[in-house]
Structures are given as structure tokens and as C-alpha cells.
Image (cartoon, rainbow, N blue to C red; front, side, top):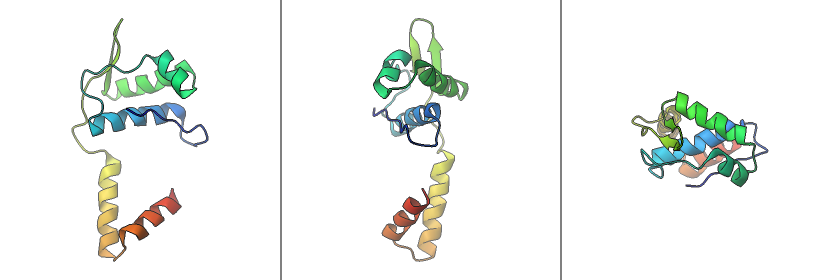
Length: 115
């Protein structure tokens, strides 16, 4: 799995890390029961504080995606069973764009401009 953070982004670092895990689970790169890297190890790899990674892991635990076990670290507790809201919104956007005759390239440019 590819772990990345953008230190220049307005999005909080724990949220970026949590989003990476969510993408990994949704894409199947991370399977139920798979162990995540220790917080200190991942923090060093991403050049962030260990507490930043722990905050992301706690957020994912609270959402039911991770479980913590003493001496075993953080593991994927469940797979995403329903599409995330952003996926549904993207599908709706594509449908509206098609209905209004926008090409894929035009839609991509529009989204890039807004992002």
C-alpha cells in the first residue's frame, strides 16, 4: 500500500493518513485482519509525529475500520461494505455532466480547477 501525506495541504495530517487506509481497504490492498505498520515506523516514513499516526489510527478505530490489540498493534477490523459518500457524489456528477454533454476531458478539467 502506498502511504502518502501532503505537508502543504490544508487537510489535517491524521485525516490524510486515515484516508490512505480507507482507500487501501476499499481497493482491497488492505484485507481484514491485516496488520498496519507500527505508529512509530509509519511516522518516521512519512516524516510526521508518532501522535499524528496514532490520531489517525484512533479515528479509524472509532469508525470501526481498525481494531487494536495489546501486543499486536492495529489491524483492519472490517472491509468497507458500502460505497463512501464521495463515490456516490462522483457518480451523480458524472451523470449530470453526461446529461449536459460534457466530455470526460472537460469534466476532469472542471474538477481539477475546483480542487
